[in-house]
Length: 124
Image (cartoon, rainbow, N blue to C red; front, side, top):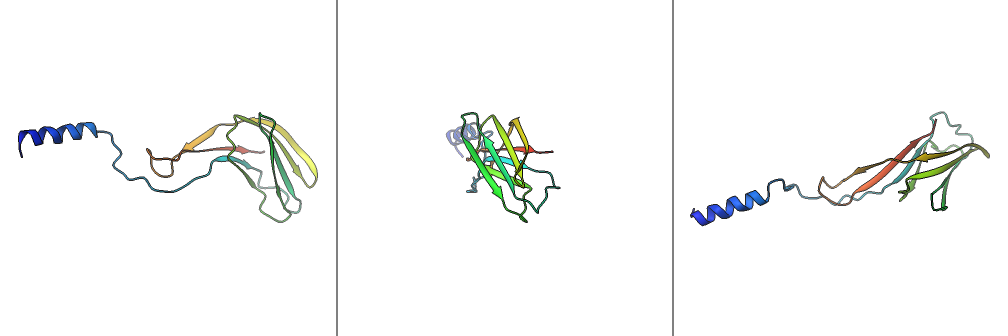
């Protein structure tokens, strides 16, 4: 190996120190807001969860009777806070405001896109 080749090899190695040599995968992900209700929610009554975002927009989901109504997911929500209204069997049981903290994860590797953000609110 010539001296010039050695210098080029050392230079390339120095440039790549810390490079991620793992290839990125192509897994997708969906971020948003998870609302987790207590495990003792009455499955004999419909559950309606409504969120109001700081810009005044609202999103809602309804879980029918006898379904698993323990978790709701609002795709794409990235607001810093929400107002939650939870209605069980036609009676509003809770209205509360929550500040949200998002966890970030990269399903395709540490230096790969996309970056997904999800928040969780556990209702007591």
